[in-house]
Amino acid sequence: MESYRKDVFQRELGIDPDFVQDIHSQSTRNVVRGLHFQWDPPMGKLMRVTVGKAFLVTVDIRTDSPTIGQWFGLEVSAHNRKQIWAPAGFARGFCALTDRVEVQYKCTATYNPDCESGIRWDDPDIGIQWPIDAPMLSEKDRNAQTLAQWLARPEARQFTL
Picture 1 (tube, rainbow, N blue to C red):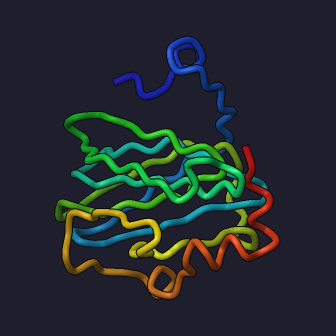
Picture 2 (cartoon, rainbow, N blue to C red):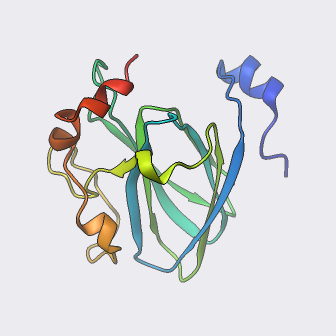
Picture 3 (tube, rainbow, N blue to C red):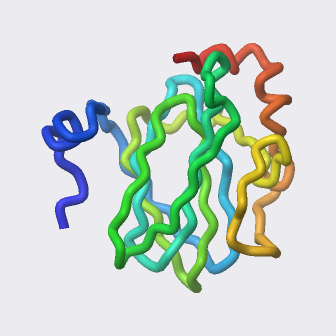
C-alpha cells in the first residue's frame, strides 16, 4: 500500500504538508482519545488506521474560521485504508471500535508537550456523534477544556485562516 505521495497530495488535493515526525498509537475497544492539538509549533496530522477499526474525528478550532466548532468524523480501518488530513488549527481524536486499534499519524511538527492541549470529547457546543455509549478516557481527556474555554485563552490566536 502506498500511504503517502507528495506529488499526488499536491496535484489531486492541493495540499503540500512538510511531514517531520510519525507517531504510532495503540488503543483498545471503546477508548476515546482527544480531542488533541498543539499550537507551538502548530501541528497538522495525516491520520490512518493500520490495525482494527476506529472512528477518526477532526474539529476546526481556528478563531476566525467560518466553520469553527464544526467536526468531521469517519470510520477508518486497516481494511478500507481511508485517511483523514487535519491541518494545524484542527483538534483531532478517535474512538477505538475493535479490541485492538493502531492509529498512525504523519505530523507536520515535532511533539511539544508544553504547547499541547485538548478539547472535551463530549463538548455540547461541538456535538460530535460518537459511535459508542460508554467511552474509556484518560484523566487528561476527562479533564479537558471546552472549545469556549480554549477560545478565551491567548494561545488560541495562534490558529487563524
